[in-house]
Length: 531
Image (cartoon, rainbow, N blue to C red; front, side):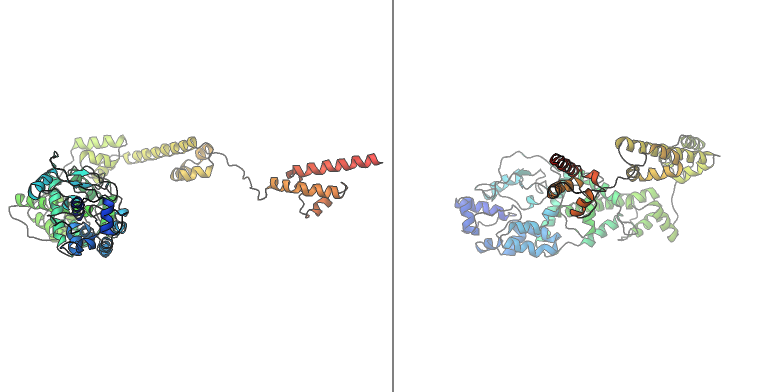
């Protein structure tokens, strides 16, 4: 029962399959002999049995864990879970290992399958006589082969326990070339996995924050530029052309994709850390190449963005170009220049008479100042200054705004009444809170006229008179028969407890009063006959 020798970058899962194929056993018999259990599941990259494998091979447990599973990858990004992951794979507890890797808590997940490169399979058959499953191919989210620049092929796993004799990559399958960016990403992931395999280091969140700060994605108040960060990452990830893409951000507004990762308090999928680190390295390479091409005199090396901005300002670069390179705003650059007495190279923009006429025309039509500023590529302050120069235009625009708000709020109230015709005044107030209060201040008469009239409150009775009526019928009948009908309602009410039910609330007890009247008439009729 000795395991086959490990081939380069082979997974423990692949060694199990090769061993099962050579032994010629059925999967349940093999599991009984190897794990002393027949009902057990073997994961393709979080493979259990490292203790048993070390007993029948030349490697130790830690070597198998680091080099033949992806347990080291998850331990690197989850250092507080590293001991749990290792002990779970050591004690053959696959479900505990899966939970320890926090995969059940990550929303971005992919369907479990096993991947291979057709060109690698052909090369392995020629060199070793058999194809096998490579560990680097099984990294979640990696869709390209780091050796041959082709897409990996997803292969569905057999039914549990996922072990099957001869279940190895097939050679002779047509390969498809992948994008250069995906190929570079796969090479980066391979080098990263190789580097952490031989060390016991763990992920440092502060190093990621420092990289983002150096590239201008963090403000002076230590806040993330969330919109720019998410937009740039989505644009970069779209060029990977991965399919499937469950682990990638779904849109340029997917702010949640990075929010938990950057907080450092929530466990995230390792692929997300690899993606953002590869993206930041790509940005750093691009910026360094641009600076080498554009700058004849290279700025002094510095890790601070303020020093880089000051150096570029001294070279006479336009503020727009410095903003594109560093990600800092022009207000920040102006403040930096004033603090360091650096002259600013700006191209002044003069507002012509024709532009002023167009601004005033759009202002008369009611366009917002931001829309006007965007159209003519000027500041909102310049727009407001031009509007203020025309007598009466400011008051007219205020009236436009007032009328627009009045129409909008009236329509909102009318639509709420149309959608809920039986709604009361308080319900309309809660559903259209801002509109209600604004109209209450400025259009109170119209609001009171259009809203539903107040209704009188209907008290909810605490007594179920119907149930009480049904219970009193047999009691009243027995008392009437006992006294032969010669009893008044007042005395009868005292007999049943003196609550006043038969006096004050007789209209709520129709069945009881009917029995009382019938028995009283019957006894009077019998008494008249006897006379």
